[in-house]
Length: 277
Image (spheres, rainbow, N blue to C red):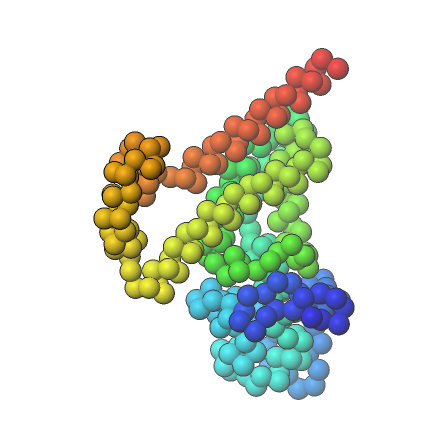
């Protein structure tokens, strides 16, 4: 536990919060980079964060340590501490870096258009913004699977992460919803995406840990499951189609389309209420 009441990163790399929030905010918003005396020429906070993200992407968050980064950057470990107090604060910087990665063009364009007329003729297509937001977040989680191991309930927000949120909100303005509801849309979409991404990541981790492919895993259970289906104890499951659990079914597309349809119903309801008020 950090001295300001926040939770620091744990030793196994599964962080649940930040370290010294005040120091992280200084580093994120400028004026906090204090290299001290005699740092290695060319060493910068940006290089340290870039190296940390690269290590986490390749080997997981637990592989990120000040000692490992000093090796990657070809400098002494103590040189790193002149730029960042420790791993907990470094994690805050890593989060801001990846959460603020550029959104695809449709979201950028929708956000810019929302700045002029968010609800009138020619308003940005919020459906495209939701679609692109979901796909870009899924892609982000696949590029940085270590994000799924972090409790982001109390993320220290820096300029990059705020810019990403600003663009997402701009793309949704055409929905005509209240501000808390717009945040609710983002939370709903992100929760859906995180759930699918976590399932995929867990499946991949299970293969690595056991050495069994998904096919081999289910083949071992097949005789028991077949006897269970023939027992009559599970009538609903016993009558399901053979392709019910097929890997060919795209749960992401199915879920995303249903989410957008639900949002459309709400937007339509609000529009109708406004015309009759």
